Length: 210
Image (cartoon, rainbow, N blue to C red; front, side):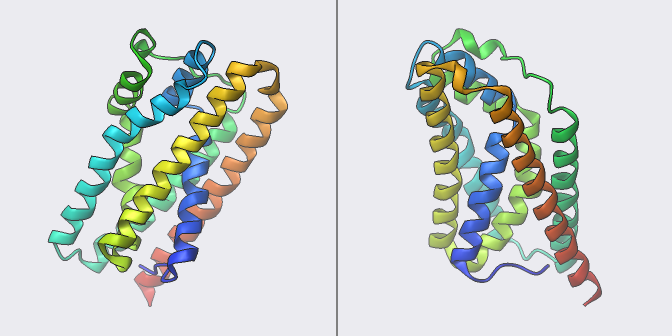
């Protein structure tokens, strides 16, 4: 598997991939939209709850990968699967561009708990980290624990910034969140997912035959 060895380029790719992931409509995004109508800090609190689940999972995967020598063929397989899922997510995002996500039962609790609950019960979240996320973590290992910690922080800060901004916009005026904005975000996500998905798949395939 070919990895990005320049930490600045790697963090830039992490920021773009993370942003495209958080922009996708999903349960956490739906909860943010609903709670933001009543509280301008709902997005920030939801992101904190999301981080309570996400940080331990990220570090768990990192330390598990650090404890074992991962065979090259496994790394290639993770890259292929992660890349394929990114392309698939891009295609599904395009197909579902006119659909709206329903907010789950977490709306009945406070925003931090809503972030924790919605993240923990989201099977797609776990699947993302076991495939696409693991591919990024394998790359982050090149830069050691400090580099990985920066990677984890950048990833979560993207989540935090986006949900905070969305909540503020919704709280102030929902008219800014129109169909044109949603379509623009959707096409951005589609482009990033398919583009990076093909990159991961191509990199893994190149390593397989190199």
